[in-house]
Image (cartoon, rainbow, N blue to C red; front, side):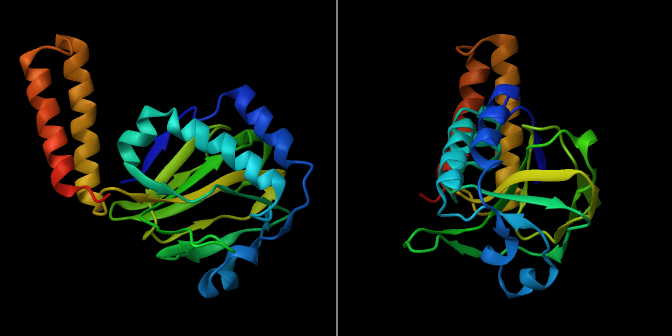
Length: 227
């Protein structure tokens, strides 16, 4: 499932985050690359152990926890501490697949990367290029979203970032280990959750049909979830 999640951060949240990261020291983006990615990747990145990355990551994590759409779609078990990158002057990231397991340097924290996420932090009109292109069974999908909006997609997807030929594209990126490993099952649960919310809005949370559908949702989640 590929899903756009609007307004993870509002304009004030984006400004607070940018104040943390913009003045920090940025390094070669290959600091976190695997072997395949290093051949395709040209960008800059905040060191993941820097104060700016930690403080910015905390802002992102708080925003994720407050987003019902993110929780419903990703069913997160673990979230890798958010990282930050930027592209300018023709920089790009060629076609690649994210590593199956991500390990935080200097720690025993590791996750299975079921989902990848990109949180856009620049107005899309402020730069040319920089589209996130994701290969899906239905063809290539493009994402270039307003600042504060996020796209979540299977980490197993082949994806790339097109060259930024004007301006700067800044984003936070990270990976999620879901409680539900299978993408098809996770998609069904998300669709069912949206249906339950619609029925609850139309009939009320105590209506027998709302209660019944809520029970179906949780019983399926109970069957499929790993914790």
